[in-house]
Length: 339
Image (cartoon, rainbow, N blue to C red; front, top):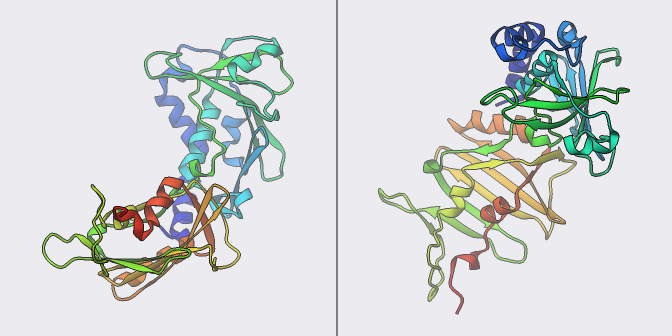
């Protein structure tokens, strides 16, 4: 999905949060029917459309969702686009949340409900601050643990604490607030149907490049272009495992890419489809983290696909899980039994 299209959908999804709050309250019978407590955030229901930023904090981690030109973005990630539905869901649930049951007022027991000071280094609590375009506060709370089945089967509640108030509460809201980037953005970095893969060329540090290509015939398997003599595949090893790994790549985090990664520590994979799409993946390791970037070109029917990939991924670097990095960039020796 291109940023232009994504932004368009973001605007469409976010034009009437106030209406969404009303609809949610009408259909969510357990949220306002039998419970008559005060709203957790009294101003939010009327000012949902005024929310222009949501500042989240948990210990030393911070994440800020900002509305820019009708689209929601991540401030700490150079305005990378956020899924509008994720923001909408959070605002609606908070706007409809009501204080249902008093809990402890003792600060030394806050941690049991995960309502300790959210600025503590190892805090499990999360601070949520909703701000208007003028930067003024619309609502703020400390969000704690969930209490599952609190209001019947499948109806969870959340523990909350309000700033300046020692009282803690069980609220009738099932609220998820994460400070992980992957929970706010479209996680997909690359996705393809492996039935159309033509070849994958792998160039890993310190080793000659090698090619895994589609075999001829109806089975459509994969083979090593230059099969070494006298080598035997490991039990269960198949060359198709590499193209299969490229079928779906999802991010854990992301960052702005200053320049194309090059050098002796960069692994490179050139992925080519039968329809004319060529994608070059570059991966580098920093500590225990694996960072992946990509560039794409295409001819014929693949030209638009390449353009979409460039618009979404060009200029960005994506952190991927270690297991995925190992599956994408296998060494040639990993396929064969040792002598």
